[in-house]
Image (cartoon, rainbow, N blue to C red):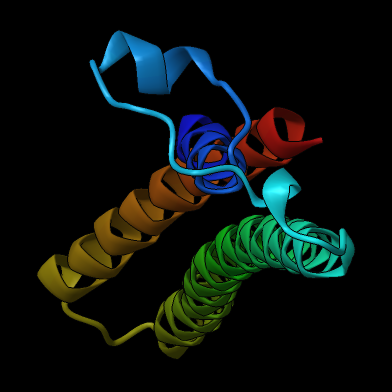
Length: 143
């Protein structure tokens, strides 16, 4: 915003208007355009300067909107990745539970294999719980 004000001050100074920044910098006022026969060139220049300023403000506002949109897209991508990982964990928990039940029903199983599958299922349950809480906290944070 300070850059915009500096630009406006410089534009006004170029048309002979006294500005604080010009005198503070030890500059001298340029020959004012008021001494010309017609005020038309001065008005044209002033309107052009105002149009440039409005254009710069529009570009600045658009940049801020694009930045906001990019941040929203990043948040959506982050949540999508977390949700996909959570879905993977949940499907693995279901698969492991089915495999555990199938092994138990066969009456011929390796106890170490069953223990490993049970431990893996427990790990996935703990990870999915933590991930669910993380996703909930993120939703609360952005809401």
